[in-house]
Amino acid sequence: MKKALITGVTGQDGSYLAEFLLEKGYEVHGIKRRASLFNTQRIDHIFQDPHERNRNFHLHYGDLTDTSNLTRILAEVQPDEVYNLGAQSHVAVSFEAPEYTADVDANGALRLLEAIRFLKLDQKTRFYQASTSELYGLVQETPQTETTPFHPRSPYAVAKMYAYWITVNYREAYGMYACNGILFNHESPRRGETFVTRKITRGLCNIAQGLEPCLYMGNIDALRDWGHAKDYVRMQWLMLQQDKAEDFVIATGVQYSVRQFIEWSAAELGLTLRFEGSGVDEIGIVDGITGDKAPALREGDVIFRIDPRYFRPAEVETLLGDPSKAREKLGWTPQITAREMCAEMVANDLRNAQRERVLKDHGYDPQMSRED
Ligand code: NDP
Ligand code: GDR
Image (cartoon, rainbow, N blue to C red):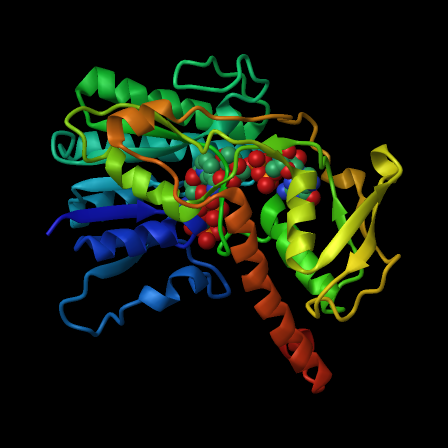
């Protein structure tokens, strides 16, 4: 039975990857952070009680800033594969917490690689680094490939650039099987609530159910190449199953704007939107309603406004990946389109909003009960 260690197992990708590897028959170990509230919602459905015999899913407390902790876990688990998915992964937040982001996202990768070397696991343990299309930042060519030059535009991207190169360096210097997946944006119903797609689907569903008045957004003309996280974790595993470690771009090769994603999400709720004004004064107005998914809304309601607080000090305006290498060498093609993914996300967030509406209508306020 192969053993895998996943950092960031409680995150979007970590949860899908853990499911995927368990289905493949792996013994899966995940590192979770200590938090004052439960932070395992995304993996609760695969949790196995520590008292169960013959468990194949194990959680370890740890943190990418803690070298001795990482070294001990690696020594205990002796994994065949390490997937370094843990990160302070929010680009806008990295401008607020640049030093912490560097410590986790850059030094965290180094700590793992060095621990693997120190423990003499370097000829056994294969290492996957969660690299990112944010490395391209101010893009030098379109579409972006494995050879497109980098120009990172945020503390997050700069930290990830160190992690990218230290992974390449350990491969070249010590012959380790270490590789980078340069992944373009990927989303799902499990996406964190403050990333743009989930913010839109969750926000619009809440508005449709009368739980929130309006969606406040930043640069809605940004262009992204969005895929589904389920498709992308399959690729992370494939990258560690080759004869030789190599870096791959993982993308769909199709690009849409944030504005388009808002329109799709609205359409899933039976809403047609009309955009009026420009720049920070742009607003989105309900222009038509069909069906019964948005009982709280009337034609003419303003449900979208720009708030400059969501603009970034340096923006990545456009990203579009070329996944040809992944297709040709690994036979990988994404199965789920951005439009289909949007529908899945809206359906999920609408169920959540409808549930909350029912609770509120019956006099139960979840917020109040937390404060009591
Ligand atoms: P998430 O933000 O959903 O998950 C990040 C995970 O890292 C969480 O489990 C989080 O723990 C954990 N984490 C954060 N800080 C630390 C720390 N100091 N020590 C240990 N663990 C920590 O990210 P995604 O699942 O979306 O992304 C996975 C990886 O892929 C990240 O490295 C991200 O930067 C990268 N990436 C993501 C892309 C995307 O579009 N999703 C695209 C390209 C790269 P907790 O749950 O406690 O917060
Ligand atoms: P990104 O994802 O920065 O590409 O990083 P995010 O969804 O946060 O932003 C995408 C684009 O949307 C614009 N935008 C907004 N973004 C947020 N979060 N909130 C808003 O209100 C808003 N309005 C407009 C942004 O400016 C941006 O242009 C994600 C993360 O998962 C990284 O970890 C990963 O490396 C990259 O994708 C690839």
